[in-house]
Length: 315
Image 1 (cartoon, rainbow, N blue to C red):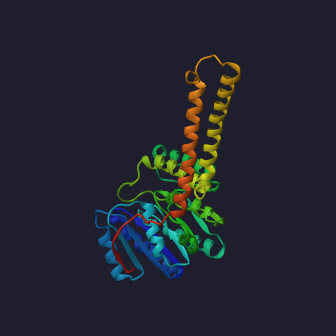
Image 2 (tube, rainbow, N blue to C red):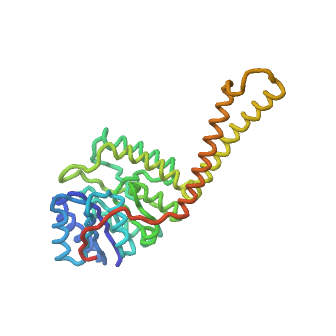
Image 3 (cartoon, rainbow, N blue to C red):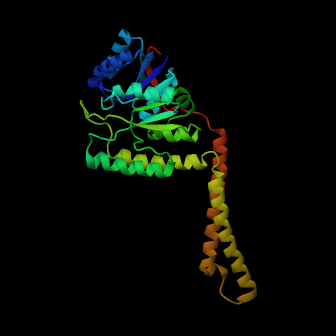
């Protein structure tokens, strides 16, 4: 199996047949051995019915149907677990990703030794205010935080060596940061290719402005996980000790001052330094305990996929 195409979707009944015909045309003209894995992320239209019909006439079409809408990350995770191709390519089902890009992406991964090649929609057909400008800001922040120099983290068109997608775990809303997850796992050969972006032909986008807010929150999460995910004590423990020492220093100061300087002065409990010392020592202890508990959780963590499959075809 040379190629696995992993395509998550939600309510894309109008575009599925056209997308399938386009992909098959590209695959046959390049003589690829391939499979197409559609992941129906809880669609309420005829999407699963169409996938089932396609799988009946083409055994290379495989389908996974979620019990409800779990999100794109979980859909990709399910598709990755089923993929058998040497190169795995992800793309959206709304026809905004161009299947004609597939041969070049495959070439870059299979013959030029890239672990990942990410698409860059340099010229976009989206709203400037609601998508383009927020996307530019988001991508700039992602580059600065992660160290992965990509222009378009959120492009659905990406190509991976099979070892990459079998190593990383995509959960939550981390599909935007698959290259960062791969880098943290040791796959550092990450490339980028300018791809054609097409105006949406059917329906409306499934993503609103909240995706950028969630994206920035996820960026903070992945920064923390990449830096301290395996050793949370290095952050919380260090902060806890520092804050505790500040409180302890104030306590020593108050004790010396009371014993040797102001023996007949006001009570220690009437001085603001007492409450600073008490607060710092309590917070420092709590931070240290948080780091300790984090270490215990890391060592006892069990893998959870976070989705429920209700049907499959050709799997």
